[in-house]
Length: 107
Image (cartoon, rainbow, N blue to C red; front, side, top):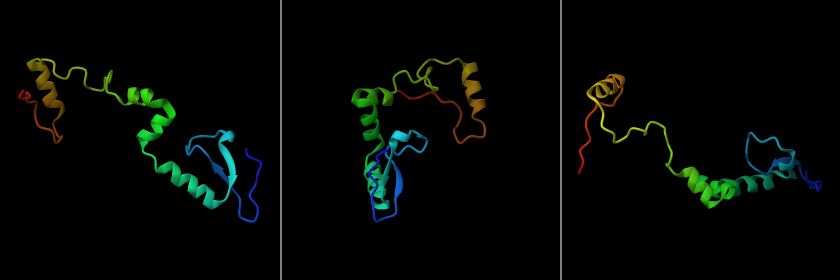
């Protein structure tokens, strides 16, 4: 922790990385309320994308943001489905706003 303590004002222990779950003492510094507010405002002016690029680099952020390898329900998208499978899909959507299974039109 920086040992330079501002004088003449109320002292705050400020957190440099703006991560609420972080407990690293190396991320703490002494500051005033206005310095802490300036640090907070500077951090939150960046978009989530900018923070990802800062943390992982452009290639790493792009890889994390890509949908390649995403297996969250898209594994059989576009595949031919049996009538039994279509029926199960329709039954599983009962009560939802989504209608029964319909074959997509290819334009």
